[in-house]
Length: 230
Image (tube, rainbow, N blue to C red; front, side):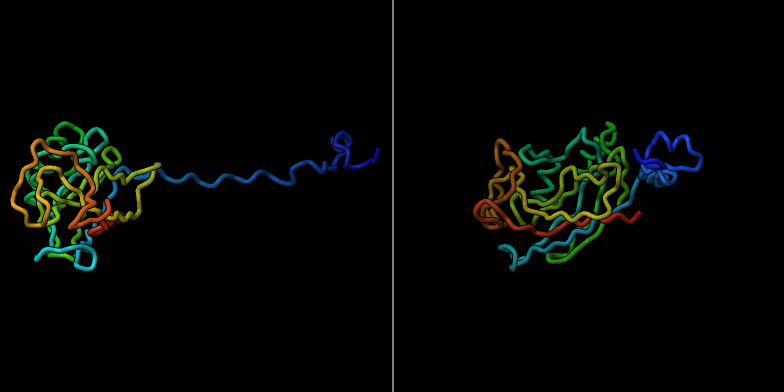
């Protein structure tokens, strides 16, 4: 057997002798923990409307209605794929109205399931863009925001319950392509079809037929870009 520091037992008996398996220094200190995310954040959402003759069929005056929506929690939804349109969603999609969808958001706020009403302007025609700033909190981290495709029977674009706070962190930037949806409340087939109420209402579905789609799909008509600004 070799003598010296190669034997762990002998190393422990000989002063100043260090085992080859012994640590050569103190363990590295862990880095500082990341600070917790703030309770609230501020965002700017920019609606870039790209609907034009280069992307889709267009009527004489392609445009969108004023933005309307809210920040809320998971206990409430103001629209969803496969669901039936509320009266607020119907009148937004058919007439471009912000009310009574704003009243539906206010009712959710009173019930403790939503926090802020979001109300914005309409872009000036298409293509064009418009922005809206708002605050959102960890308690109500979801955003719903919609606008009518106009003119149309009951078509719209928007987001449903989009999360801005995930995995303990605020989203810094998110770009959402906006495909067209049919609210299921009017059976018109073209941009300027006369009113033809759908009775009973049908589920909200993505548009995949002319004039905006084909073969079961439709290209995005614009984007929402959510940018954290505070």
